[in-house]
Image (tube, rainbow, N blue to C red; front, top):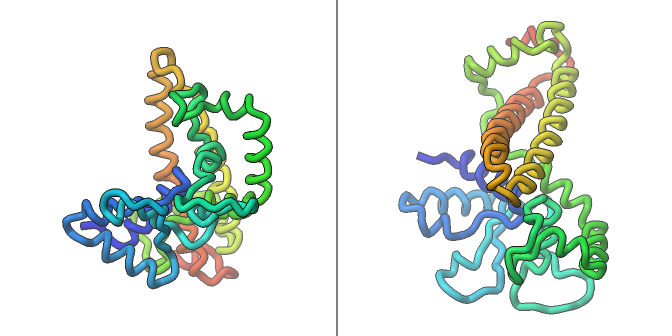
Length: 252
């Protein structure tokens, strides 16, 4: 049975990977109604918002995306040119470009490739302006923690404790503050590696006949990287909940 923490984690992960949030269809497809219940609670808690795309076809929820309240929101970005469109998300192609989700070559008029963008000066000018306008919020979006803030940060499993005790900062008995800084530095590096891995996947995907093996290996690698990032976020949440001046060995 899914928990609220897992729903929040899934929503944040999807947002960081796609930039468009969690489709409302999950609420319709979930027979247990837990997704609907927890998303509504997250909205009430101010962590999530419902964004309508302006569409009218199909089920109501098929036209809704659930977004974190922090970071860039493509459904609320109407630009600065006063252009009005009933359908939202006019910059979704730029978000995909920013996240490295665009294939190198075009797959038709509805799915232009990276080269199509790079070779069009007007598009690149618009992208540069969009990026300058939203760079800070995009950084917030890609660095969102997927740990539900209401989660009990004081709980550590036996495997969590074993992992902590294997770290150099534990063996050196650093302060909690120092341990947290070391762990945050490692998390930053893991996120950089994750971003590079995503870029490699996009490149390999352009020629699966040649790079099929590399593509599969990198997909497995990114799954493990995401697990490591999620786990370190969990540990960092616990570290933040402790008295920062204490020595790590004194609290375990």
